[in-house]
Figure 1 (cartoon, rainbow, N blue to C red):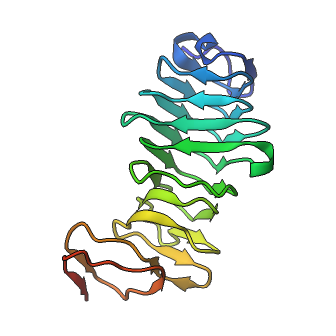
Figure 2: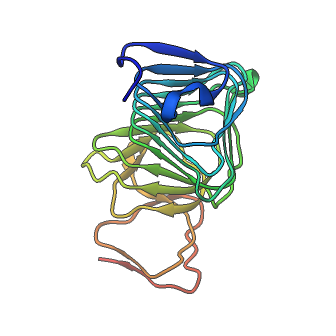
Length: 212
């Protein structure tokens, strides 16, 4: 059972203060925390300090923000963070942002990261909304995977830098044109529509690219 209604808020010095890892409202973390259990928050999660997910799963029913010295850390293959709303990291000047070397961050809303962070390829940013998702990102992502099959798909005004791209048949629009940025094939790739390469290098890596 959730402790309170969805309109309540909780100020935490330790995530372990959440009984059974569940809370029905908004949560603000004010001290560094290494998770030892899965956490399910129905409202927003605001990080003013570092949250290290370890091998656990964090579910956020609302939005995820970092402020002040807040930071989200994912360094384990099993680490999984699901955000059903938007993700917005603070700027470099606040020390906020992320440290991703492994695991998966799934986002169903918009994704904003103004920091110039270099993220390991083993980490996946999965965009899985069911309507338009907007990306504003200066970071060099690891693996960017799209699972947004809406007609609008994913939109970014500027280049999304990444080490690996998995489109899964989804629409990615950059500026006023639809297309993709260069990536390296790890299997034969079939595109059943026009393919526009907007930037970077498309490395066939010995595989076959078929455009129908």
